[in-house]
Length: 106
Image (cartoon, rainbow, N blue to C red; front, side, top):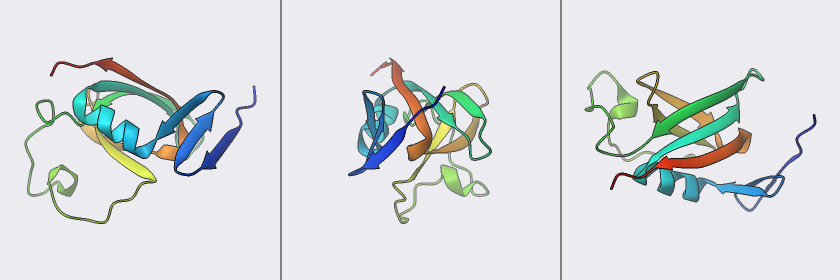
C-alpha cells in the first residue's frame, strides 16, 4: 500500500485527514490522544500520549524536556508524554498518519 503525503501551509494531508501542528498541540494539552506515525527509521509507531498538565510528571532539573522554558518553537516536531512508556517521546508532524482524541477529563 502506498500512502501519499502532501505538506501544504503547515497542514499534513493523508487521504482526507488533515493534522496541523496547532490543532494537535491544542488537543494534546486538553486530552489523552492516540498518534500513529512513521519513525525516522521507517517503522510505524502507535502511541498514546498527552501534554495535559495534570498527567505530566513533575519537572526535573536533569530532564530539560520536562521544564517550562522559553525556547524556539519547532513546528516540525512535537514532544509529548507517552502514557504507556511513562517517558517523554517526540514525533515529526509530517510523519503522522493518524491522530485521534481518546479522552478529555477536564
